[in-house]
Length: 124
Image (cartoon, rainbow, N blue to C red; front, side, top):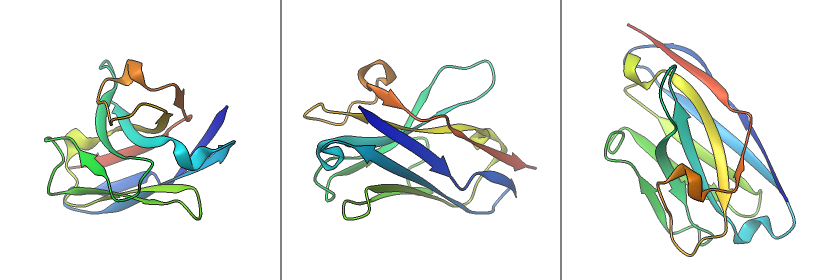
């Protein structure tokens, strides 16, 4: 069982930045892939980025590449999402996720655990 708690969401103007954090707890949590998904109203979960159990392996979606960065601290069992140049279309609930797959998979159904999420709202 893995528990995930997100923090850092809020309201920001277009072009601004936010940093989200996810604290993971549970047995052998350092061996899990940790990732970020987002869900806008009326839409499905969208893969944003993830960091593999080895902190050197990260991946972000094409839609946020160049603006968002994922990083992981295995000593603290935390996953961060640094978001810059935010746009109104980035408005969504951002959730942390975990799984034990060998590779980072952008399919939300392949992730076993999700946190409650944190709201990010970008005003134009």
